[in-house]
Length: 193
Image (cartoon, rainbow, N blue to C red; front, side):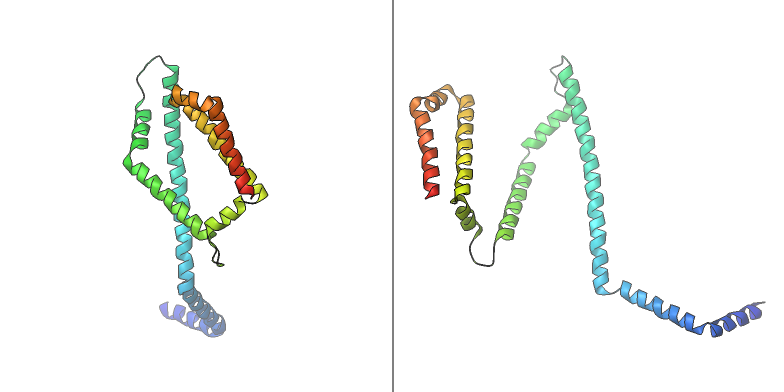
């Protein structure tokens, strides 16, 4: 039986040797392409991308669960007559005060700022700050800058309102309003020149 089966296999191979040879060459070529350095790097990149996406989905799921728990605790706390703050809100307060979070946020902000500065640099040699200042001294830029200064002055007044009556009296006095108005006007006039 084995001899008959072997003879049939040999006859098949001899009749279809071109197809078998083509299949072997194709398989070998596919193997070489699959394991070539450029395809291997692309496979690794795609694998990292899928891993990143899975991690993002997992982080979003955990974040949604945390927000759900905090929301329930906050709703229950606000609806009750108890003065006992829920543990989830206490833990958020501890996290917000932690040195680790503050240092992580500082490093993240620094990294984003450095990345933005590096990304905005041009090959012409002019720095990012020079281009920002050039834009601020255009007509539309001076309007933007005056809006920023005005917003700063308004927020200063609002902040002063909560920080003390003496400071609030000084800012809200005729001399204080005149001083703030003069500062804003001088900044706008000097930025137009």
